[in-house]
Length: 85
Image (cartoon, rainbow, N blue to C red; front, side, top):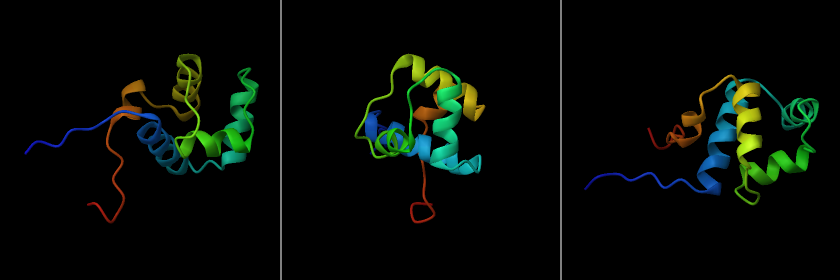
């Protein structure tokens, strides 16, 4: 049986969290960088996105790609924890 990756708010949030941690950024720092780019983000915004509670707009995704120095498709790759490897 083939594994299928479902892209939804939760998987996008997990990917954001993984990339944020990979870049050694605190939620507060990511929110500040998003504010510099004109987005009304606070720590709680980052938390809600990472938990899949809040959606990411296309403009926000472009900004996150810029801030995290990643490709848009990096949000669509599976995020594996050490337990899943």
